[in-house]
Image 1 (cartoon, rainbow, N blue to C red):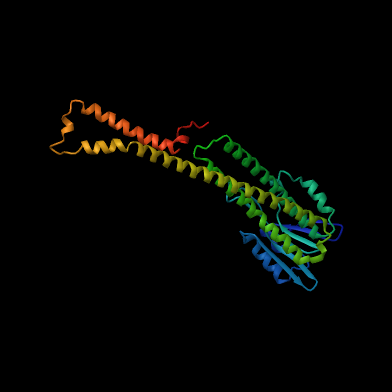
Image 2: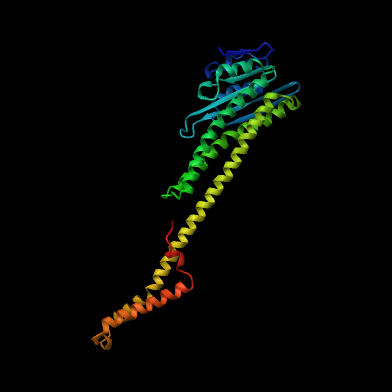
Amino acid sequence: MASIHLNNSNGWNWQQFDPQDKHDIKVDCADNWQFKDWLEKCDKRTTDYTGVRNQGEDHALFGSLLYYHDPNQEKTKSFLHYYVTEGYLVTSHFDFSIYQRTNEQDLMDKLNACTTAQDALFILIGEILNSFLEGIDEFEESLRKLQEERKKGRNGGEMLDNIINLRYLLLHWTALTLPIQDTLLAAKEAFMDKLESNVDYQRALLRLERILTLQKYYEDEMDTLLSIEDNLTNYRGNEIVRALTVFTVVFIPVSAFGAIWGMNFKHMPELDWEWGYGLSLVWIILFMSMVYLFLRKKGWTDDLLKRKK
């Protein structure tokens, strides 16, 4: 049997169900096709989903929310399947134990104080958002450590990988948040003006706004870090190319004289000179020095010779 988790004195109730007991749910809307369709398909859904029913005086919000997903374990996904009207809330089993910031007894006291089933759903969504804030706090800690490593000049070839990994983690929290934003907007479509003065709905919206603001801020920070790392990588690449170019140009005299004296002509009188070897070294060093002094006068070697601190 589906368990009645909460039968409120204000006239609404909350029923939770396990997949094998879902057809035992007893609510007034059990015969409408949207409820039947939602109930039949909810435990098979593997993605977020939001629906609205506006049929005369019958207003309902229903769907599926991914409320827990460990970013390090793809298979650890927990969905909250819900169908809510003013008088009843039907959900799949909600696991309170996975949330560190949620005390089950405190949450039940809040739910008992609700005047409608809609309020209860918004409180549950608020708790889900609260857990997302905890994950974003952990993300912020990782981001600050990465920034400190960047300030200290630590790279080791891993900085870009670490930035990209954090970027994916931010996308993970964004992907979890957007369906809740859609749910809260759909709730306004379903219940319209009733939500303008609904404290639990407004509180959930504010919590969502906090998360979206943080995500936007961290997204900008990640873009800045990526830009800095990209510029540094390009700068280092240019410095390497410039250094190789300077060394190549400086050693051109060596290559030139080596090419000349490496030819196999029969008549090359300088090969018989008594002081030919010494003079050739002097000429090579002289021409190399002239090339180097020319490059230095142009200012193309200065920062290559400066020691980086």
